[in-house]
Length: 360
Image (cartoon, rainbow, N blue to C red; front, side, top):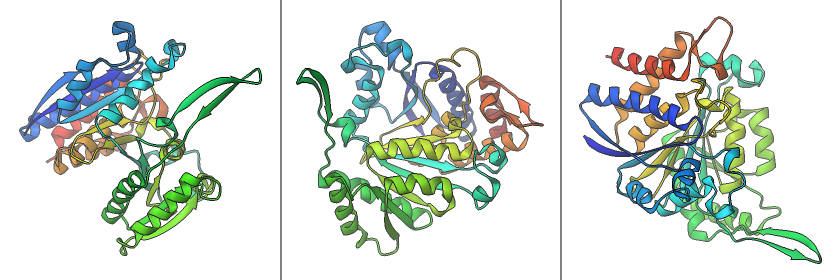
């Protein structure tokens, strides 16, 4: 296959981790007879520095024309003082909107080799952690109206959270279909005891559940979910929730595995076009020091092959290679354990790429 991939390195450690993912993709292309054409797009703070905006119209057009998008990370303290409409994160919201990326899939899986790195006790994670958070990505408070005004002599800020029924239904269907492909259990997370948006969310999900009798469905309040993720994470299969709740819960879930640097994600549209990225930030304090963990980005590339290109064998090869490297005891600083071999970002990428060549 010939595929065009828009590469968005971004800021901080973004260029370093993206370079390792591309290294791995090049090995996959050579091994399986594919051609990947990479189109690099400036996004985030680096684009603000060069062009005065977080992404150019030409860059957005490149993303739309590509077969898929692979992102590093954006943002950093350097741009915290930028006006809200040109902050680095605005580019991410714009890409999600323009590409129609309404469904964010964030798998959380505890690699057995890294069980000791989890902050939870062994008896808590002993049954394993393997869950998928399906997060609505283009609605809710992040995309609502935001105002700051002076009322009675003091600043007052307002952020509007809004959801239409069709937005809930489409993410709900993604969640039910995802549960069907996994262990058949879906929990919908809301705050229906307080919020009108959550009451609409719950009513819509209940209506949809009648169409999926093969999926075990239940509701859970967001605060209870946050508690249960720590108390008994093995109970979860698929979690579906709105934008803000999903943002918070997925970061909490990532720490069950010991490092946010291990976590990939996929942001999907109603078609095949999607954006794939690790869930961690730009970590500017690590930039340029060869200390970043590229595995989250490499595993995001595997998700891209699986979901965007239907290259299941190729995705399996990357995931198998990651296991092989971890089995061999190689670790970046964030997942370092006693008795293991420390490696930098570039060497970790090379180890995974070399392991792929060894897979029959």
